[in-house]
Image (cartoon, rainbow, N blue to C red):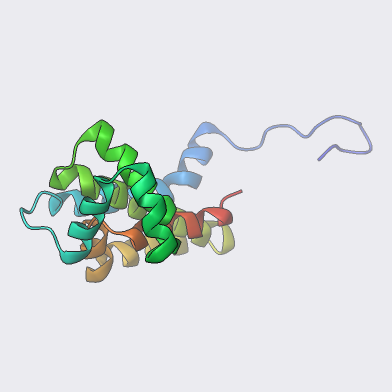
Length: 160
């Protein structure tokens, strides 16, 4: 805001240290979630949901278009994304699981940032750490699946 008395913008009151401390809860929790999820990302067996995602990603764009008209319309964007992702990065276990891992790490970081903005840095940090230590969060983060990628997109509108 501009100070109406002096018609000059206010002086910068936040230092670099203050900015770092402000984003620390989100970044720390997001990186911790990334590390926890990557720990289990290379286990050798795919779940039934991962097998479905892997199989659909190998189809052509036209075949995916036909599929979403008859079966999985709500997952069309994910299937197309995974189709192009696997074309670039391959279809190994880690490659299939990495989009979900990145999405969940982003969602945890955004949740911690939301806690920081609404309440305090401590609340943001604690909320992010709680998400990291919940077993289902880390389990599903390390699986290639349609619903995990949506977690980050659902929490991103909170970031502005």
